[in-house]
Amino acid sequence: MAGFDTRLVAELRDPFGVLGPDGRVAWANQALATLLDMPLGDLLGRAALDMIHPDEVGQAVDGLSHAVSFPDRTAVVPYRLRRGDGTYVTTELMSSIVGNGTHMALLVRDGSTRQCIADALASVAHDTPLDTTAASIAKAVTTRWPKTHAAVLWFERDGRRVCTTDGLPDDLAALLGPSSTPEDSTAVFPWDLAMRTGEQTITSRGDTPEPLGDRLHRHGLGAVACAPVADSNGDGAAVVAFFDQPEVARLEFTWGSTELCELLLLALDRHHHHRQVAHAARHDELTGLLNRSGFLEALDDALADRHGGQRRPVGLLFIDLDGFKPVNDAHGHLAGDRVLQAVAQRLLGLAASAVAEVGRLGGDEFALLVLPEPTATTASTATAATVDATAAELAQHVVAVLGEAIVVEDPMRPGARLEVHIGGSVGLAVSGGSESATELLAAADRAMYAAKAAGRGRWHLHATA
Image (cartoon, rainbow, N blue to C red; front, side, top):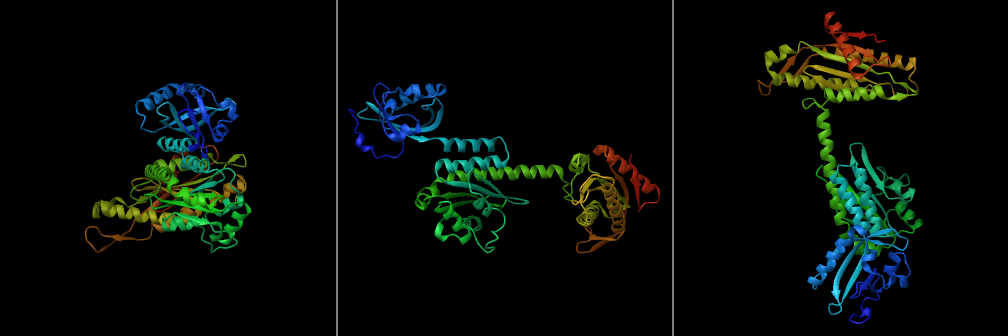
């Protein structure tokens, strides 16, 4: 081929081609033919623009003009190239003018990795679930390094989450979970070490704990590479890759994982931000309990939860403090706030011994949601009776603990303690199966007023239909 010595690139493993002055493929290696799924002989002589996706031909023409105008520059541009079967493959084209300005050299790389990264970035921008972003990041690893498996680890309030790529053997995936393998509860796996120290680790198979090393050997894998991320919430996360060749991990993973970790960090920060916003919207700032909106949502979810084809019964306690206004009048609203916080803690303590949710509906009004025990197998009359009995017993305890003296710090006398005596009137309603959340709350509210009318400091049951 006049004007270009192909011996310089004949040994390249990456797909490579050369366009002649007429815009046709003048030379190509077998790697490019394999990427485009066509015989090498069919590739030679093809018009380059005919191989580009129709939507990107204009971009390609501009690219050619740019290359001719700036022959000393190298451009890297994403294109979809048509394969032999008519489908398109996403690629990254690195082009430069060669051969005394007569030819254009094209280094072609599979752009699937770049597409996965773009997908991950788009998922962050559109506030899609973190699992979606993690899946794109894990897939980017396996498309960048064939014959690898990948996983993304991060922490939620309820423990470690794991997102793996398809094909990761189950016995390896089991080791990525929140607890150590039963074979060796003291084993420290590379990803745990990376997240603990904040330093990237690349561990050859022979240097891994025995439970992991055995499984790597079984599946023909030679190394584990882990890139940790520490997000603004203080939780650890990591991109984990299982390589067949340790040399590839050591040579390429260190720099190749940087962009993926930055994406994971961005996704984690956005995830935690939205989680905090959602939590704030559903919780009372003073006590930390569910606010009215959050409690009604929990109540609505409980009423809508069907078990055995029927609605599950729930109990609802509506609590109004007795004698709270005098606390505010005599000692100030700051003292009243501390009393409300003490009441919240007492109610949480009671709820811990029952299947219950606690909320502050506003002012000095609180509510407890009583659910069936997890062992209940049906929504039968027996289950409803169990909820009724549990709620009634809880109502008695609420009246008792609210009748005990509350001691808080006196805001008007630094270092001094303030003892107040209040109480609580409790209205109890148990769902009959058809009530909405607002209807059941209203029934419990009426029962609470009946308790007040009967002398306060007691509880009253509202019988629902």
